[in-house]
Image 1: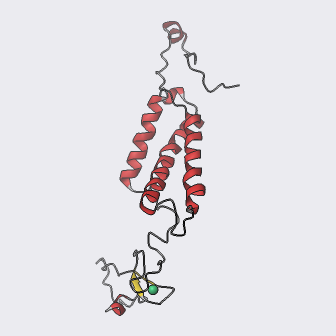
Image 2: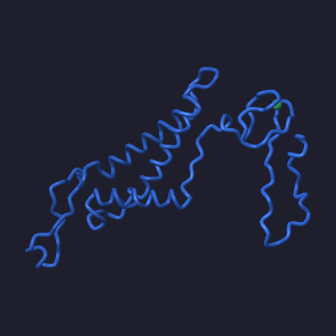
Image 3: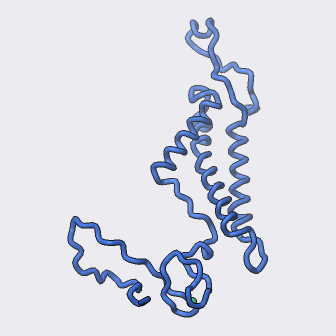
Length: 182
Ligand SMILES: [Zn+2]
């Protein structure tokens, strides 16, 4: 039975064009005992050793930022932050670039958290998983640094005074100056 699952190199000799071929069943061979397992299983069904491609073998979360829903979420998230920081007209190009990066980092941080909820922080040998420091904590660190760079406070849209408006150039005068720019 399991032999039928074996990955055969394009044995589907005639896939009629225009018709989507049925997805072949992906398999992975156990390194220890040679048993063929379906791709994505955590442990070999025969010898119970960790199988490549399974969740347990993965040392980092799988992060997708490419699907339409995620892209939309990231867009809305960035826009909301931009509004919080006083709108595009009050931000530098670099600040906007930092804000655009931020949702990606949030997404990555989320994935790491889910990963550790699923896997646990410790390995079966009782060691802290390698991804915890290099992956999760360093992502958290970058996340906080970027957040600090962007700024935490909500900033009101700067409204020019009537005089400034009439003079045709709205000065950048506003209460907050937490960036301490040179
Ligand atoms: Zn095995």
